[in-house]
Amino acid sequence: MVKVTPDPPRFPSEDALLHRRATDHYLKASAPDAPTFILNDNLSFEDALAHAADLLQCAVETAHSSRDAMNAQQLAVMHLVEMAKGVVDRALECVQPR
Image (cartoon, rainbow, N blue to C red; front, side, top):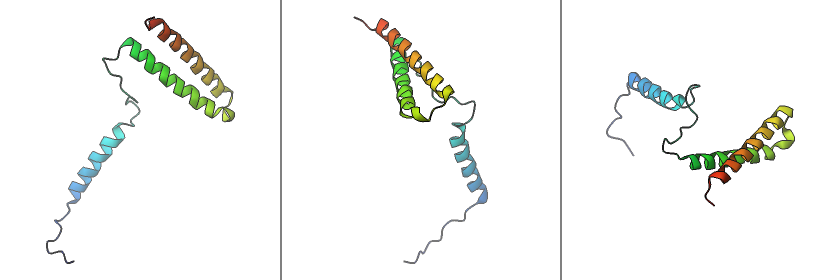
């Protein structure tokens, strides 16, 4: 098929602008001062504890899956995470209605 209408000319300045905008958009999220995630301001105390417990559970399970390859410092960090999970779980038990 023969194309009757040619493509419009490309302007290098437009390409550079688009490239810079895309780079700025995607690299801002990985900037060192950018937060890794943002908490909802309406998050209640109980919900925050529940989310913290879930995140700590994920950290514990991830650590357990790679336990054989851990050095002493990593094992110590895993122990601290497990202790933090226990504390958060206990706090969550105290907050939940009986």
